[in-house]
Image (cartoon, rainbow, N blue to C red; front, side, top):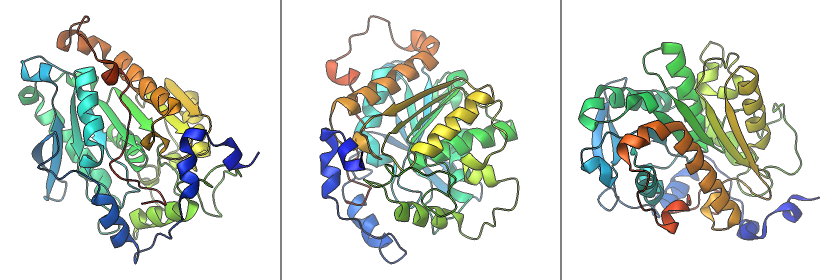
Length: 344
């Protein structure tokens, strides 16, 4: 069957998108349109904090604190990394989602406003995420968090950075991570190129395109020669040793350009002795959860259930088991304030 015949009806709006070439010339316009849909820092439901990056620059963090945290309860913590192909975005793009998730789980969420490529190529965005991780550990008493249950989480490029961050944290041995939650993560710099080891005629046709993907990876790469041991930090799919990484949740749509690389990564994690929960959603292209529908609801519930299991023991001190929860909070959807694919 052809991709459009496999597409879930809830996502038919993806078929009306006119693909736009991504380039250094078009990127400013794409950023302007996409960022115009985000809340401002003043409108967002988070509080700003500041950390120091590895090169001494100020790094903005967005803190989402549930009501129970304000009541003096010790809570788990999630480090969230936003998507945007490494080249656009900021934490406010997922403001409502993160605020709702913090309340739903009774967890503090720290979202990092990492610097973007191509102005700041590898390893700057990754090192910014590592600096945010270090900030959480340094401020665990002030935040009153259970650092033993720390989760790193991200969508798309943010999922790729989260996967890379888990590898860096393991390699450096400074900050233990309890779990990684990777939602359609961007893991393999070869995807969409002639050098890709994967071939699937139904993926990458609807939504996020091979051309956009290659532009974003090239923007992140900068002058990096891919010739040293950091290649797995740049592109986690190229990491040779995946042992001793944290338990992993990974989900992706069946029509997503990233399907094959995500399947391969989940399989290699499992073969390396890492506990893996893996979901493939039928008829779903990249960023499908920007649109309401049963599959979007299912994905949202799968994420919440996985997070509950991983931070469950910490939640007993933070949230009473009989705490009331609204139907809406149980069905948190991830809906960007603006489209990031070819309709952006």
